[in-house]
Length: 104
Image (tube, rainbow, N blue to C red; front, side, top):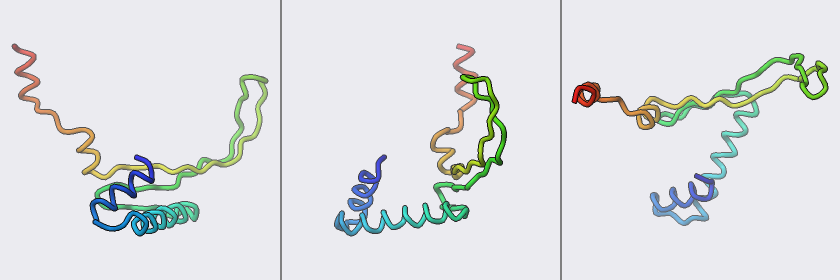
């Protein structure tokens, strides 16, 4: 889903003009990105959490040259889905049906 698709969906669900909804959604994304740049974690109930992770500086091997060179620290965002999202993506299996199907 793109940002434009998200804005259209929110506008349709809220019954608001797309222009007004776009300002709210874009500002929300801006605030989230700003918080992540500051190293803050974000938690949205029912969706999941975003956490800034850091890898320290290290020395890496460059296969092309065969040399070792320093690599600076790196930051990235880790997403952890909420239980509701996790269960929607991976519904629990009905083991009785699995056993029944294996026997027959």
